[in-house]
Length: 156
Ligand SMILES: Cc1cc2nc3c(=O)[nH]c(=O)nc-3n(C[C@H](O)[C@H](O)[C@H](O)COP(=O)(O)OP(=O)(O)OC[C@H]3O[C@@H](n4cnc5c(N)ncnc54)[C@H](O)[C@@H]3O)c2cc1C
Image (cartoon, rainbow, N blue to C red):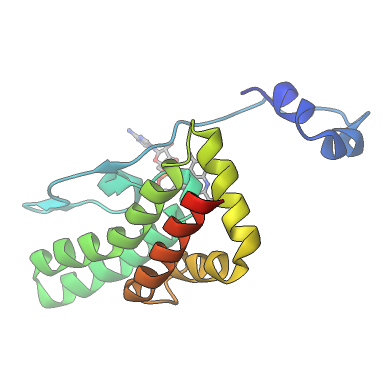
């Protein structure tokens, strides 16, 4: 989608930008989920997008890169890069799960609609999913919400 097409769907924003001068080229980048089997070998270790990515829809790329940098620095101290591999996998787990969850809605307008209806009806589920996304809620708490969300989707 180009900017012009996007703005057609957001009339309020389009109105606010009317008459604004474009001062740079329109730019974009590809995004996606990519997992590597190993993030280090010999004397090379990868962090950030080079070590695997989660879809940009999660907004987690920078946080992951910083978390991985801290984990890698700790592994340098102990000289144990396997520990970095394990921590890397752990750090990616939640964002990867959330990316999968969000991308399930991609290209399924009926599911998008039902999900939003369910969130409207049960705002606490949305709040808890957001908390899970931010890592302030343990995944186990989601089991109950997952069932309620599933039931909501079936009955919306
Ligand atoms: C559309 C989109 C939206 C995003 N939105 C968010 C968001 O809202 N929040 C968030 O946290 N993250 C977001 N991300 C992800 C985030 O941008 C990345 O996770 C983050 O930039 C990764 O940092 P990095 O340093 O690993 O890689 P990069 O930022 O890609 O840095 C790598 C650098 O290496 C340079 N480089 C490549 N090859 C060479 C070479 N051979 N020699 C020298 N230099 C080289 C590149 O030019 C680049 O500057 C988004 C990503 C995309 C694509």
